Length: 191
Image (cartoon, rainbow, N blue to C red; front, side):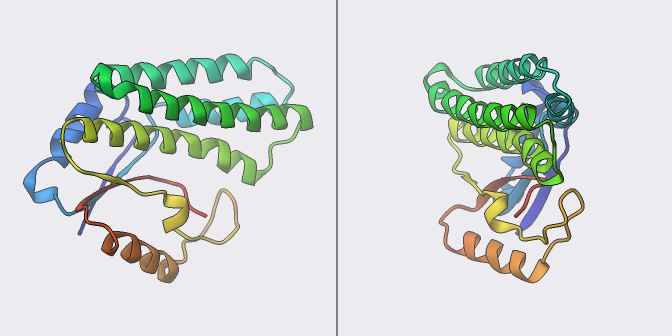
C-alpha cells in the first residue's frame, strides 16, 4: 500500500484538487492511502479565528462565514450539480459544529491547546471530505478514513507523539476490512 501526501498548496483550490485527483486515479496508485492537508491558507485562518474568539473579538464569525463560503464554492466547482447536496450538507454541518466551538471559546475567553487543535482539525476534515466526494463523483470508489480513529497519540496537544504500534494496528484493520483499494484521510489530526 502506498501513502500519498498532498499539502495545502496542492489542494489550495478546485483546479489544484483536480490535478491531485488525476494523479491519484493513475493505475499504479490504486492501492493507496491519500493524505490531504487543509485548503491553502485555511489552517492559519482557523488559528486566527480561535485566537480572535478567545480575545473577545466577535469578527471571528465573519472569518467562519468566509471559510464556509470558500469550502462550498470549492465543492460547487468540483462536483456535478446532482452530487453537490450531500457534500454541501456535510460542509454546513462541520461549520455549525465549528461555530459552536468558537462561540464557547468566545464566551470563556480561553483557547486551550486541546481546543485549538480541535478548531484547526476542521481544515483537514473538510478538504478530505470534499476531495472524497469529488473522487466518488468521477466514478472511482474511495473510502474516507477518519484519522482520529486510525492514528493514536498521547495527549500532548499541539505536539502529540504518535503511538505507532496502535496506529499501525488500526490502519491495517481499517484497510483489511474494506473492499476498497483507495482511501483518503485528513492529515495532521489524530486522537
